[in-house]
Amino acid sequence: MQGLNKIERGRGVSLWRQIAERLQHEIVAGTYKPGTQLPTEIELANDYEVNRHTVRRAIASLTENGFLTATRGRGTFVADAPITYPISARTRFSEIISAQKRQPGGRLISSTEEVADEEIAKHLHIESGDPVLRIETLRVADGVPITVATIWFRKDLLPDLVPHYAELGSISKAMARAGYENYKRDKSWVTAIAATTHDARLLQVEIGFPLMQITSVNVSESGEPLQYTRSRFRGESVQLEIES
Image (cartoon, rainbow, N blue to C red; front, side):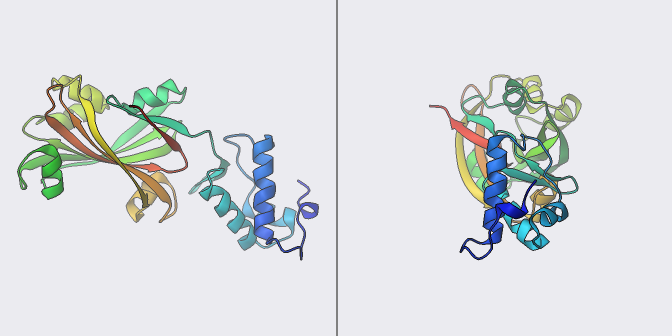
């Protein structure tokens, strides 16, 4: 890359912005294709004859705008096209990812039994203090972390949900085994949040990285609430599709 003759000192545009614009142009032009690893900060700094801090700021700007993804321990990569994630009555992560020719995967982070607080009780139509089952999962697409979800289930209706999920590796299959194959999404709320230390570690992003939180309630065919979910998505990896 002929970096040195692509930036101009003293013309009123900061060096990091010129570098960001040049890299963005190369990404759009296809010089760096989706999934391609970007040269290291040191290599880019040498190419442009600037310090690493200047390069780091350019990369941060492109990451915030969805052109790059930074994965701790792996490096910085040109972002793939965002996953289109429909919000509809039937929203199933594995089906959505597979339909876009990507490989879904994930794992159980934790599971426990606890008592419902006021918010959970309200959405599940139970009493505050009633027992609920809580699990936390990490879901990936092509090996890249996409979402961390915390899910609370009605223990009175789904007492064996956790062992079913551990065996089957799918909430949909675990729900079907419990007799709720045709459960559906009743309500969803979308909020922008910043990554906590916990979520940043699992999603391999920096603390404070912008995440998109989808809070939802799933119900049985008869409309009885079954689960309450808070899913945190990497903001640059997903675009929501709202189905009416």
